[in-house]
Image 1 (tube, rainbow, N blue to C red):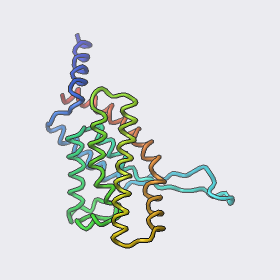
Image 2 (cartoon, rainbow, N blue to C red):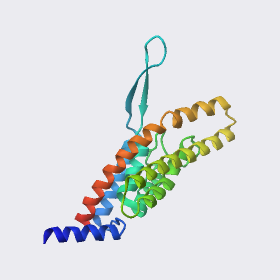
Image 3 (cartoon, rainbow, N blue to C red):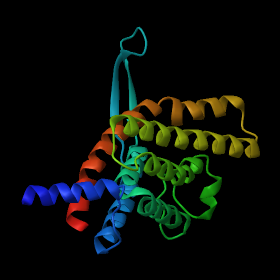
Image 4 (cartoon, rainbow, N blue to C red):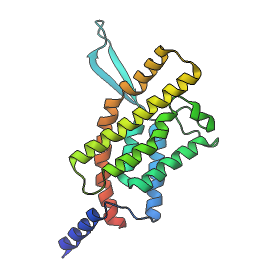
Length: 213
């Protein structure tokens, strides 16, 4: 009897495209995801390359900020509506003068920072990831969601940065170096960690749906 009930719940779960209903638990999850995004902004993971940088035997050191994987996690956990709400709350909070939760501070003037394009792109990433994950998940859909989510953030972020650089009349060398540091040297890590975050989020989501739905 219990097995039939669980199977029936899981079947309904798939038919409803893994929707999480609005309740106090949903509000709590949104708050948790916003907090995770803020925490990820100020979290640095130090990564050392094992390949020598030059013949002197030194090694390249790399500091990775896991904010994009947390955005993918949020989209996979909460879906389109609630995931989008979490990101919008984060952006609105950061644009106010009261919550300097962006990497370089906050306030409305932050829209003229080079990296604001990446933050703005979180909105489109959540929508895309949630859309690609609708229905019964598969490895293929998860890979497409991760690649799509990560790439759309970097593409929009780079385009936005180039527009700001154009307004400020920055040199081409500055633009190239900035793009290399913000995207070229990090995108592989974003993809790898985002896939791990997505897998974790989908497992948590199933448990939460059974508890809340």
